[in-house]
Image 1 (tube, rainbow, N blue to C red):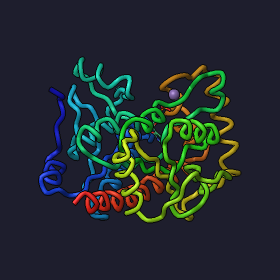
Image 2: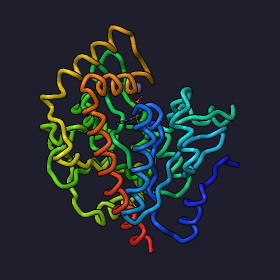
Image 3: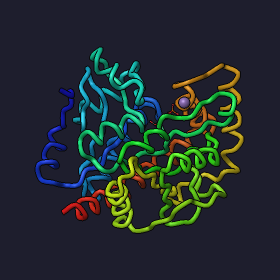
Image 4: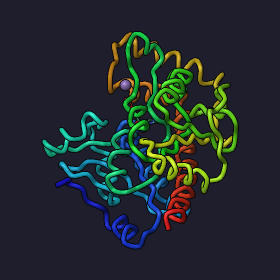
Length: 304
Ligand code: PSU
Ligand code: MN
């Protein structure tokens, strides 16, 4: 038996057949500082509700996969200092030892699929790190998109990554990368990357239809929807460049590796930009939550 529980709000939505949007928890524990992490998680949930869907923030608490957190659970997770970061490799072991952990994009996709949830909103996905040709650092998020049928809404690969290599790997794995509202792949804090998106679909109903057709065609895996940050919140690539370079250089000098790389870089860039990158990060997550709720409603209509 899988130790999996639904929050009261998510259980009600399931019983009514209402649309549900999965949300990850690593962004709360490892992606943003306290107290902005909890404030943002609450705002993201409110945004999903306002857009006509039910939010399901996912985490493992004391060995149980939680699909939806109560406000108290969310607050506790955001303040606990020693929460594990769970990807595909860590999920079963954490449950076996009755541990507590926050789920990355990969682990959230696994849990969402177990719970029958089609769609998941986050900030940015993990990808191919710069220098991956020597470090081999490629996020398990990419493999997950290739095998688990969940549509993920993100603001593009983070600019700390090697975006062209990330797109190449996604293409090799057969993952559709669908831009919304523009032809270019967005670059997380910036709307532009200079790279043309492999696909573009602006209508949430057609994005849901593509996700359902993939399954009907017998193709495993999900879709990556890349949604540009709102123009009034973006930071240009030119402005961010030096902070990214410095953070990468420090990570190298300190020998930061494996799971620590992404949290370290995000935190240093927040510090180096004096919070500007954090404000942009919050704005783009909220924007993704809105789009994901619209796609969730479309999935619901298409399944009826
Ligand atoms: N993007 C963000 N904030 C985050 C992450 C991504 O803007 O906190 C997290 C996600 O949980 C993602 C993970 O799945 O970082 C990727 O980590 P890694 O590069 O170690 O696979
Ligand atoms: Mn990694």
